Amino acid sequence: MTAAALNSSALERDAAVVNSDGHAPKPGDIAVGVIIGRTSEFFDFFVYAIASVLVFPSLVFPYADALTGTIYSFGVFALAFIARPLGTLGFLWLDRHHGRVVKLTAALFLLGGSTMALAFLPGHAQIGWWSAALLAAFRIGQGAALGGAWDGLPSLLSLNAPENRRGWYAMMPQLGAPLGLMVASGLFAFFLTTLSDADFLGWGWRYPFFVAFAINVVALFARLRIVATPEFQRLYESRELQPAPVGETLRRHWRTVLLGAFAPLASFALFHMVTVFPLSWVVLFTPEDPVRFLVIEMIGAAVGVLAIMASGLVADRLGRRGLLAVSAALIAAYSGFAPQLLNGGDLGEAVYMIVGFLLLGLAFGQSSGTMAGSFSPRHRYTGSALTSDLAWLIGAGFAPFAALVLSAELGLIAAGAYLLSGAIATLLALALNQEFARRFV
Image (cartoon, rainbow, N blue to C red):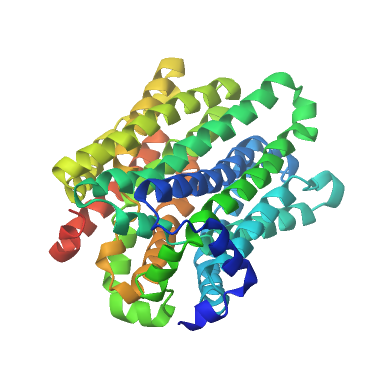
C-alpha cells in the first residue's frame, strides 16, 4: 500500500465506503462527474470574466477611463493563470502526503471561498487601492485552486473509454465550458435587465458569485463520488494515476509537456476571443446593449455544445490529430476576417459568435485528455496536470488583455493576428514530432 493511501484520512476512507457499490466506475458515471466538475469550474471562470468587463472597471478602477480600467481588470484576470501551475505544485504535494480526497476538498473550498469572497469585495470608493489588492489576491486564490482541482478524472475517463469511442468520451469534459458560460451569462443578463444601473453596480452583480460557491459544493460531492471509488484507488495505487514528483516528470517527459502545451493553442486562443474579449469590445466601442450581447453569447454557447459533441463523432471516424489540424486551419482562416464583424452591428456580431463557437467546439472538444496516453503510467497524472496548466497560461491567460490592447491601438485586424498566432502554434506543434502526432490519433 502506498504512503498516500496510508495517509488518506478518515474522510477518504468513509467516502470510499459510502460510494462503493462493488463495481468499477463505468465511463458514463465518470463522465457525469467530469461534466459537473468542469461546469462548476468554468462557471466560476465566466462569472469573474463577465464581471471583469461589466463591474470591476467601475468598482475597482473608477479613477481610470473605461478602456484603461478594463485593461487593468484583464491584467488582474491573467493572475489566475500564472498562479495555476504554482497551485498544482502545492496541491500535488498535499496529494502525495494526505490523499486525493483531502487535496480535492481543500482545492474546491479554496476555489469556492475565493469566488464567494469576491461577492463581498469593497470598491475603490470605500477602501482605495486596497480594493485592487484584494481583487488580485482573490483572483490568485482562484488560480491556485484551479491548479489543485485537477483530479485525474479526464485521464481516468480516457483510460476507461472504449477504444473506438475515445473521441466521444474525450469531448465530455469540454462541455463544461459552454454550459458554464450559458448559466453565467444568463444570470448577469437577468440582473442587468431587472435592476437599475445603480442597483446592479451596488449589489446585483454579487449574487452570481454566491451561486458559484453553491455550485462548487455540489460539484465537490459529485467528484468525490468518483474519486473515492475502489477502482480509482486501484488505478492510483498501480501508478497509472499517482502524482509523481514534478522534477522527475519534467526530466522524463519535458518534450511531451512542451508540445502538449502548444498543441491546443488554436482552440485556447479562440476560447477567449469568442467569450471574454468580444464582450469588452462591444461594451467599450459600440452602442450595443450588453444584455443583448450576453444573449448572443448564450446562443453561441449552445452552438458550442453541439459542436463539441460533433467533435467526438468526427474524431472517432477521422482521428483526433486530423481534427485538431483541420480545425486549426479553419481557425486561421476565420482569424483573417471574423474579428471585423464585431463592428458589423447585430448581424455581424451574431455571425462572429456563432461561427466562432462552431469552430471552438470542434477544436476545443478534443483538447482534453489527449496527452494521457503520451506519458508513462507513473507520470501520467502529474504530466497531464502540468500540460493543462501551461496550455492555459500560454494560450489563454493573457488573451483578453493582449487582444484588447492590440485592437484598441491597431484595430480589430490585430485581434485576428493574435488568433492566427495560436492556430500557427497548433499546426507547428502537430508537425514537429511525428510520435507526438500519432498519439492524437
